[in-house]
Length: 193
Image (cartoon, rainbow, N blue to C red):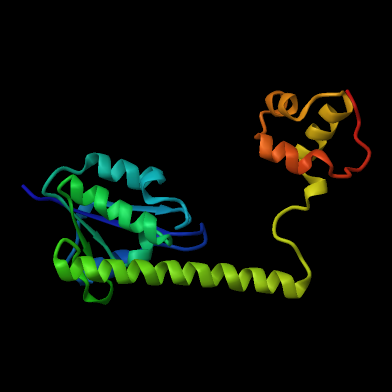
């Protein structure tokens, strides 16, 4: 017997999934207790999200997953396509309500999915571009300044003790590329233990 599952996602704790749940109900999709929602970035691959993973672990062949918008599955086109493919390989149908796409198992649905995934990727790339442009205009750099990172202090301590970069990576648990990036950083006075 086919069962209906629904998935909703928002990116931040300040947002709610209420509008997605109401839109699903208004479209005639009320999965009851098979409604799964989570607050996690769309940049996290869908198959790596705890709630999404728990949901698909409960799904069986013949079940249907309904999602309001494609970007709820992810912002990365490759991730979205892979997620839908994995579900379809398990015999799980995917229905997308956004733009009237409907059943993504049909030829028209697959075309629609590919186009929407490309636009989702485009939107994500544009957001990144605008963020970088804004940071450049403000003269700021994204993230914490390298010199203030605790990793820099660990790397500098190991360097002062005569460790090689590989030994530093092993001792600190940092990747070799991170050690190399922090190796020559002029950190404020490093206290040795």
